[in-house]
Length: 296
Ligand code: GLN
Image (cartoon, rainbow, N blue to C red; front, side, top):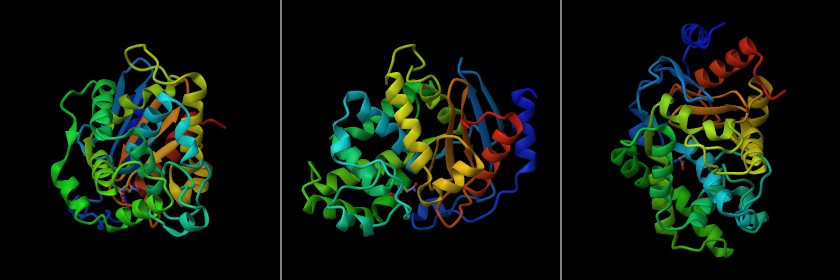
């Protein structure tokens, strides 16, 4: 089946469900039944269906890109964050105390805050610049309304950061780091933008301009952590159903990587109890089932 027919078929078959995240009030206003799907092939061509050109809040999808940017410098970040699945909700505090302020992985909030701190001041602007270049969309930006709304409701992320600071695992002031983290999560992008921006992970580290962000091993590692930790305490279920590295966000987006073939982004704001898009996981399950394109 042609990719365009395939994305159209999936868009017509999925039934969006669940409800939009409401702990960030600006996200609660979005219709949970909206659906968009984009597949970008290695040459940058995009096949889309539904609202695939409408920007949405990338939220935790940003964590896959910040990890890649940190690893592009060196491996030092691994002294400050682990790479094991947490089996706990994305915003959980419980493991941090027994594990002395070292978060389980870079994709739960605590771990992502450490990665942002590691990238240092201006992390969100660096990320934005990278995403503009990879998506080919120079107008990408932070959605100021979402950023303000999240910052007004970020007690939990401040608590995580302060807790890690008490163990010496924070280099910059907590307020500054949480503000950077909230800005990176509040970047607005469409499925088409995100699918293109994810292609470097499908190309084993090679960016859209032909230069390398990561070596082959670096890209393998980011993809591996996405597979094992990218959907939090549902990572086992996601691997079982979809069989691809993926990273979700509470804005309802999920990116997924088929190494050597394509990058996918699906968006539907209705979430399940673990914070993953209901129709998004369903669409990716259908995609790998219909194409046989999985890492397994
Ligand atoms: N910005 C959100 C938060 O920190 C990201 C969470 C998510 O997308 N899972 O709570």
